[in-house]
Structures are given as C-alpha cells and as structure tokens.
Amino acid sequence: MNLNLTGKTALVCGSTQGIGRASAVELALLGANVFLMARNEAALAQTITELDTSQGQQHGFVVADFNQPGNVAEALQELWTKTSVIHILINNTGGPAGGPLIDAPAEAFVQTFHNHLINNQTLVQAVAPGMREAGYGRIVNIISTSVKQPIVGLGVSNTIRGAVAQWAKTLSLELGPWGITVNNVLPGYTRTARLDAVLSMRAGASGKTEDEVAAQMEREIPIGRFASAEEVAAAVAFLCTPAAASISGINVPVDGGKTGGL
Image 1 (cartoon, rainbow, N blue to C red):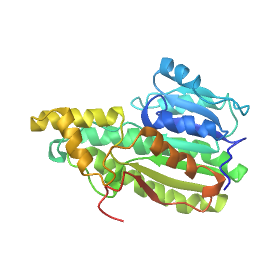
Image 2 (image 1 turned 90 degrees about the horizontal axis):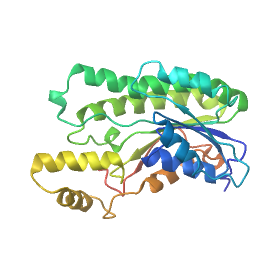
Image 3 (image 1 turned 60 degrees about the vertical axis):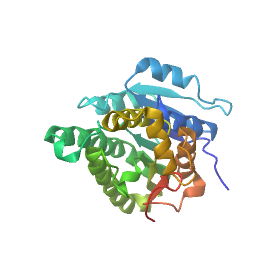
Image 4 (image 1 turned 135 degrees about the horizontal axis):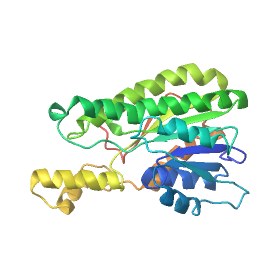
C-alpha cells in the first residue's frame, strides 16, 4: 500500500492544536512538506519544530485569522513566496459557540458561513490550479458527525457543517477528472479544546460536573471512550495518500461507532 507523500506539499489549517496539529504531524511522518496556517504566530513556530524532517522535508507557516475578512487571501500571497504548489489541503476551522438554534442571531450564521465555507472556497480556488497541473490533489475537510446526525446544543455549527459537506461533494464531482479527491472527515467526541467547551456548556446547563457529563457521553459511544486527535488525524492522512486515489466525495466518521446511521 502506497502511503508515501515524499515530494508532496501540504497546507494544514488550524494546525497549532487538536486535530489540525495532529494531522500536520502525521503528514510530515509520511514524508510531506507541511505548511501550517493559523492565527497564533508563536504557536505556529513551536509546532514547526515538532514536525518530522528525517526524510528531507521542509516545513513552514503563514499567519491567518479566519475571523478577519481578507486574512486568508493575504496569507496565501505570502504562501506563494515560499512554495509553488500545494498538493494537499486540509481545511480545518474551530466551530462557533454552542446554544439552541432558535436563539442564534443571524450574525452568527453569517460569521460561521464565512469562517468555514467562504474561507474553504478561497483556499481551494488558490490551490486547485497547481493540483490540476501536478495531476495530484487531496482536499480533506475536517467537519463533524453533525452532517449525518445533528448534535443537540450546536445549532449554528450543525447548519454550516452541513453546507460544507454539500460544497465538498459538489467539488469532488468537478475536480475528479484532474486526479483531485475531495473528502470529509467527521470527528465525533474527540479529546480537544472543542470537547472541553462542550463539556463545560453541558455541565452548566445540567448542574452536573464535567466529569459526570463526560462519563455519560462516553457511555453513548460503542467503543466506550472519546477518540484522540491522533486517531482522527490518521484517517485524514490516509485520505491524502496515493493509496486513497479512488476514494472521493465521501464522509468518514471517526466517532467510535456513535453516529446512528450508515
């Protein structure tokens, strides 16, 4: 099985913590040159030092705040001064604040749509020409199992994540002829800062401790525990390899079997 990414260059968004960081680490271990994109320059510089270079990989980073209009486009201008092509794009952005959908202001939908779908579109439009010319492209969007089964208390996120899934499926149809695959990885409950926020929100709403809430949530997972960021990243990395060339347009849950559907 060909898992070798030597000579390929990846751009990983949201790559200083959680699943994004773990994905960058895995891609580097497979031989890829990795460029990180996030908003914290100090954290980016630290993460770079943790990426494998034993196969001659050369890594770098660009700073972008997805909350600021135009920031991604500016970061891309800097990126093109450091590399001429991106073969692998990992779209990954933190989700919006939780809460009932009925209480969400219109502005929350607009901001989240921009942070996720519009920024993803900007990135894909920038990297797709190089992928076409190279005859190799992998676009992986890290979204959520909510595209299959909405998560209570995350109404805005459920809505926008679903839009991203439809966007990705459409792209897979358009880009496939050039050897470019587009897939979505759907993390379930994963030990990240996002899960910590969900535990805090649910504890506050229920009057239970966070440990009690966590234990209840883990009982809902067939394997009986939360996933690690590294386990999700393994699925992300595999979809970027030559071995996954015929896998495109799909949603891959990494949730311990929790999602109640096929």
